[in-house]
Length: 154
Image (cartoon, rainbow, N blue to C red; front, side, top):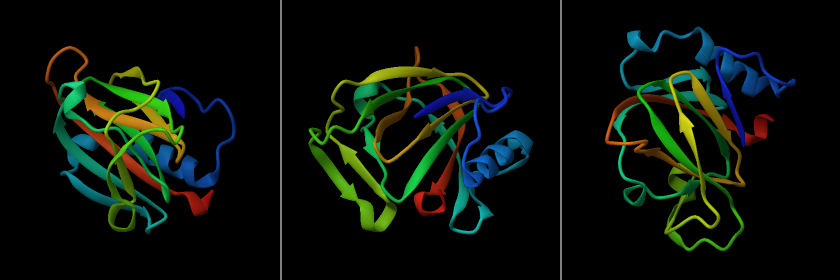
């Protein structure tokens, strides 16, 4: 996992597909876009623009992906995201790998939380379990952008 703020320069050289995704996040006015999918580089890099309301931690299931990494970016609002390494010990709640490249877990072993503020992003790789859109203090409307980057492009 990599955690940062879009206003800061990248701390190191990242793969070109990730750089392309971060450039999209830096250069897009998300107030001008409706929720939905935006292609950045075909099926290799694309963004999902989501308007959500955060929920209690126990109402959101931990998740992981195998074919795409997630860059979760908060445009406005506040949220916390649960994070953990996928140890293989988590009980699978639902596997939709074939349909949507997502596994949901019942719980997340050794989970910690990061707090997201506008401009924050977190890059989750296949070994990173994450539980997004959790209340920081109370239910809050947020706009988040999830950029999907194909692992094969790295």
